[in-house]
Length: 535
Image 1 (cartoon, rainbow, N blue to C red):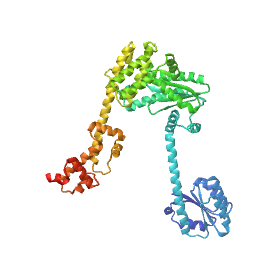
Image 2 (cartoon, rainbow, N blue to C red):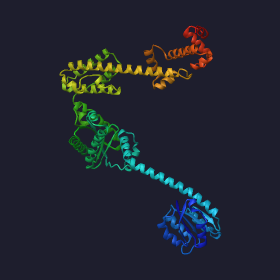
Image 3 (cartoon, rainbow, N blue to C red):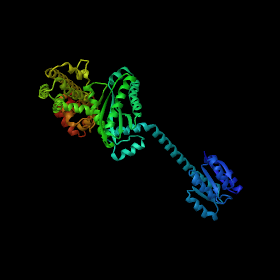
Image 4 (tube, helix red, strand yellow):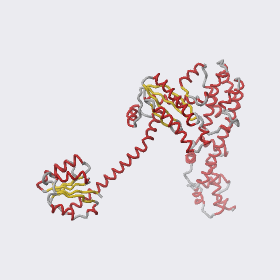
């Protein structure tokens, strides 16, 4: 119900307007009627009307002044002007102040009712828009932390345009003073242990605990922000005026986070530290380098703060190493023979021996090889248990060996087991895909539009790979298999029904009866009539 206020210096006019309309039916409530504009101005703040229906000619303060006052102080209030012919110029002035409508005296209840009905529709529309806007603002307030987190993930992944960075940081109230920045990646060391011993809800709280501790510690320092990425990792962006001071300060902060997590949460984290960069546009590079530093946890152990600068400097001091062997080994494991794998490992070890490094320095290179192999297992969703019954990780298992020759024997056996597991995985996958294809063909053989394309689309597989796979497992081509299914179904129909040959052709997926007859004879050695005669 909308509130309306009536103003006219003639009592009979006010009473006529007030008493001759069904206000409830129109959706309005008369909250007051006044004989001059001064009374209206005094009352409007308290009554808060949605609509003011006012005459122009009134004592003390006329309707035009009332309109101007409302326009300046209550712009949301709608104004309807009542005017005589002589006042029309005044009405035109009022219209410039966004008066909703005007009504010439004398007027009828019907005319006023039409104006109020239109106004009611407009007020309803405005109310709906206001409500929608209010809901939108509320949703924005509720989602603000998620919007910030999403932006920061985009910033560290390099997917924010440089020209948008400063404005978005300001809008999202993110304080990074710059001009130097450093990114650190904080990760729980034993995800599996946490998720095995705690329910999902509790393990999520523990991940949040890492974030919360990091946020509290970094909040004590100027120019830092903490957020979580989609992989349960906590990301810290630190900033400062001086690059050397920023790096030293960052290491101090991160060591404090590392110790605090262990003390309060009773588990450990490792922290990868990227380079100090100059400019917001290079933050993603620092993040990438921090993630690389974190990877070296597998080499150096858990519960550490690992700087990419220290790692790379240490590696350079250990001499050159041809990483091409790693790629060749991964390729050999994926698609080569056992002989290929053994030969690659032999050549790789010769390369290491040629560096004249003691065994403890070779460990780091072997671990890099193992990480590459484990990446392959992860990509193919093959669990380490399928490779080895040993409870210890292969990354630490290599420390039992004292010579490269011993490592070579162990690594060769391990890689061969990985190759077998990959082959088994692919074989299982191939059988499953072919079974799906057979089921699809058997369910859709009657569809004249079934084709190699449609089957491959159903399986989300390329035609060339599917054709090779299908041939390997069925010793048949797609067309050959489809034809066999269709002809077998045709035989059943010939045996059990009196359908005409053209009807059977249609039922088993052939649009051309003559072509069906030709295929039938080619497949069975008999015409349709001859076959039916045998029945």
